[in-house]
Image (tube, rainbow, N blue to C red):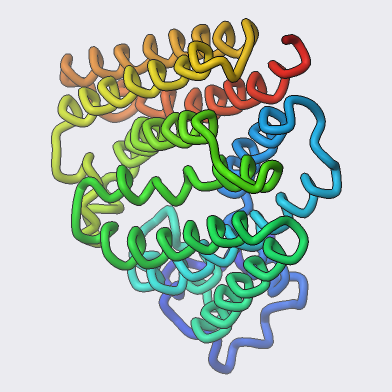
Length: 317
């Protein structure tokens, strides 16, 4: 366990100050990596690379894949670092974010701001010089949308924050397509919408689990301002739209038989879990009996399976 992980939350609001010497070089390196939120970026790359296979209708240039993934990591990492810089006040008061680098003091706010801005500039130039400028523009647009529109405007003002803020998380689909073709298409738009409608029912179950944290800092996530039944109804609504949109790739002619088979089966299981969550909410179950995290964990498996099918389908047509 590193010093970042073991430092008590009671000290979480302090600056580095005279205690800076306690942090090792390894602690510092790991902290700057943590600013990029690598686990979130994994999901973004899961949606980027398969779209490149679909756009190419086969195996895309491997250097292009590597360049796109690196650019995507740098851009999303910059956005996440800037998000942590802006949210450092509420992160210090939330249990689930109490070990973030700015809260523990291993990284100073000024360092985080400089790091995030540097990644934003470097990633944009990287995309433009090694991929294409269309992808560079999309990546920069996603970063600005996440930082300015979601983090600085929507997050603390409306219960629809994750709905519209989720647009930033949809952009890797467009970036993956444009990196191969230099333009966009209906297929890219459909997959963009899949992630758009996936994001709320993916995140709301987690928000239900940690709603006390959000309530403590005044962030109006939907589960904070609405009952579990209302939230679960919204989850079911978005889930049905998501599954319907995911199947639109087939009649549009972009995929063969494999993708709709996988998307249909995965979607059916998703709907089963979404309706089960609604049934438990209507029954008044709370705490561990609500089992809201079942859908959250399945949502990650769902998006992985669907986009894996996106990548495999061109080889089976």
